[in-house]
Structure formats: structure tokens, C-alpha cells
Image (tube, rainbow, N blue to C red; front, side, top):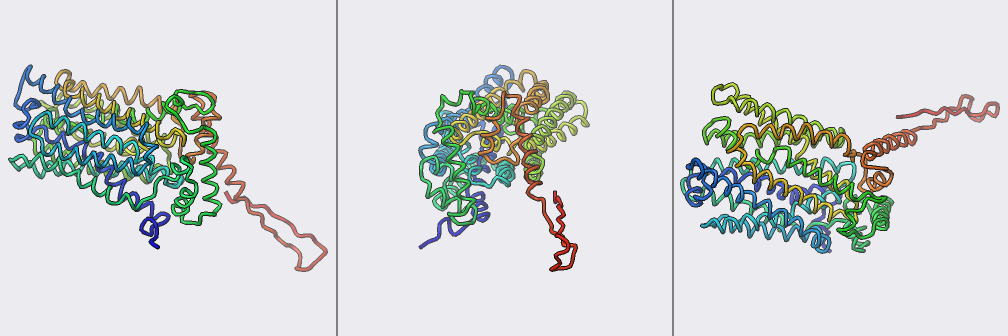
Length: 529
């Protein structure tokens, strides 16, 4: 009899899941977000689609083309939005793996439509279908991964998504640069077809991977859930660890039922509205901090504001994402030690300061070369702060605050929020660049420092050290939205005190000779904290 999951167990199986699904899925996220922006100034591309040409036009014609260009670029995010919304009804019915498979198939269809486009209409349809598929993927993969990961390493494992996303961003920029010198349509058709590779990798390995044990419990498949948990924990099905985990999942479902869309707006004892808003805020903050203008319009920033050539702009864009990729490893190594809140506050503070400096320097870049250099450095530093404090953490946080019964609808709404504000930023950016120029960066400086930072500090509870089921208890114990942060902190302190008590070691010290009845043994208690 063949061993399940190609014989992988425990940490080996988790690594296999990451390499075969999470890695290509989030490489796709980064790649799709950046690849199109690098094609907008290619000669062969604007010749094929002259209505989105902002390079060879001026005045009112350029303004009109900028609006069309922003819409075409942003339609991908509209597709992602509807793809995520579809998981409200389909996500829990199909299961995590089958939902991912459907998303990959749509990704392949969208990539084929884009790479074979000869008209603006086909390009638009391709962007929509591509987004529809990837919206389903982004709404499902983080849930599947967090539900299958051990609590003590959940943060680091999910933050890897940020590392992989940065790798996809870098890949897109270097492919764009490598084909920049090709004068035929292959310079943009190949980059748009390349994502098919990632989708086929995912589809090829899905049959050899386990579905989420929590989804199995929710659908009454307890025996399968025990089998999956035992393999993930590398133990036996009758192990106390497995029995305890399954019991927690069942208890969570009994407390909250099966979950419904209407239930998301209830703020009774389980504080579902509070949790839904926090989950949505995590992805709202990721898109409204200004990363959208870097992800989609990096080349435009370097060419039009910093004032470098097309080739240098592409080299700098590719270098940014390699730099961001390296920075993500800082979050990977610290998120389960420092926690989510501190990294998120560090990130938005740094991004706000960088945005303010960029605004001040690009306004003088035309006359002052030093200002151009400082602006370029701050764009790199923005990527550093985003990689450490926003890229992977925000995908993780929404899955951690959502209860099992409502995890799919909450995360579907969370992902919809992500793509909604991604659409807003991408749609507005070309027009903002054309109308207010460098002042656009001031907007994001204010958003980071005066909106996102206070909300994170006062309202977002720390999820480090808590199991997914522990979060249910934290919200039930909270009296209001301000109280959640305090309860989470107190629960961690209580757990540390309990751990210290369990670590107390009683050492029996016999002072008298063995066998002596004259003296009773004396007992010394040592605390090993």
C-alpha cells in the first residue's frame, strides 16, 4: 500500500506543502502585481495598444490615456476581488485544495488570453480572468497553510509568503529587463505567459497533499482529520496531542455553529464584527500604505520623478525586489519572537517617514542630483520596512483572528478588502501622478503615521504564542474593542506564569545517612524559570 503524501510526515510534510503550493502561489502574487507595470513603456506594447500609451502623448491625450491605462491595470484587481468573494459560497464547499485548483485553472486561461492579445478588449478580458483565478488562490492558500501549521511556528511559516511574493516581484522585473532589448512582441508576450509555469507546478502536486484538518472537522470527517493531524504532528492517531487538537476544533464549532455571512456582523460574546474588522484592516493597511504605487509603477517613479533612463529604471526596480526579498527574512526570523504588533508598527512608521522624504526630494530632483539619490535610497528603504512589517504579516493576521466556523467568509472578505483598495490605489495613481505629482507621496506619509499606526497600537491584539482556538477565548473575555489588546497581553503573562510553575523542580535532599531513622529527609524547592 502506497504511503500517503509521498511518505512525508511532520516538518517534512509541512516543508513539502510550502515548496509545492505556497512558494509558487506567492511567487504568482508578486509576479502578477509587478509584471504589467514593466511593460507599459515598451515600444512594441504601446504600438499594439496605443490607447494606453502615456509615453508618446502629451496634454489632454496623455491624461485620457492615463485614465484608460489605470483602468486596464486595475481590472486585474477587480477580478481578484470577485475571485475572493466567490470563496464565500465555494470555499467551504469545495475544500481548500479544490478551491486552489480552480484558481490555478483560471490563472492559466487568463495568462493565455493576455499573452495572445491583439486588441484592448482581449487584454481587458485576460486581466479580469487572471484576477478571478488569483483572487480565489489568495483567499485560500493562507487559510490552508495556517490551519495546517503548528502554533509555535505558524508566524514564521506564513511570513514565508512575503519572501516568495518578493521573489515573484524580482523575477518579473528581471524578465522584463532581459526582454527589454527584444524589439518584437515577444518582449511583452513571454512575460505575460510565464505565470503558467507556476500554476502547473501547483496543479501537479495538489493530489499529493492533505486538505486542512480543520476543514475536515467542520465537515464531520473526523477520522480523516485525525489521520491528517497525526501525520502533520508526526505521531499516532490516538496520541493525546491529536485528541486534544481535534477536541479544540470540535469545541470551537459547537460554540459558534457552522458560520454564516449574517453572523459576521454580530458583536455579541464572540465579537465577530470586531474580529472581521480587524482581519479586514490587516489587508487594508497593506494596500493603503503606498506599496501599490511601487508594485505597479516602480519604473514610472524612477523614470519620471527620479529622472533616470528606462534601462537604469528597470535595473533599480529589479534590485528593489531582491532587496525586499532579503528583508523579508528579518520578519521570518523575528515574528515568533518579537510578535506581530511590534513588527507592524515598525513597518508603518518607517514607510511613513520614507514617503515624506521621497515627497521632499523628488520635488527637487530635476535641479539637484543629490535629491535624486536620496529619493532612490528612500524607495529602497520603503521596500525594507514593507518587507519586514507588512508583506507577510498581514496575510497571516487575518487568518489568526478569525474563528474556525467563520474563517473562510472572514478571510474572503479580508482578501476582497485587499483587492478593493489595491484597485483604488492602482486606478488613482496615474491620474494623481499627472495632476499633483510629488505631493501624492505626502498622502501616504500621513496615512501611515496618523491613521495606521494609532489603529495598530490601540486595537490589534498580539496573536503570537496563541493557538487559533485561543483567540476565541481572548475575544470572549474582552469587554470592548479597546480591551482586546489588554486581554491578549494578560493571557500571555498568565501562560508564562503557568509555565514557570510547571518548571518548578522539587529536589529531595537527604541530609542524614541512608537508612537512618533519626532524621527525616529535608525537601528543597527550586524554581527553574
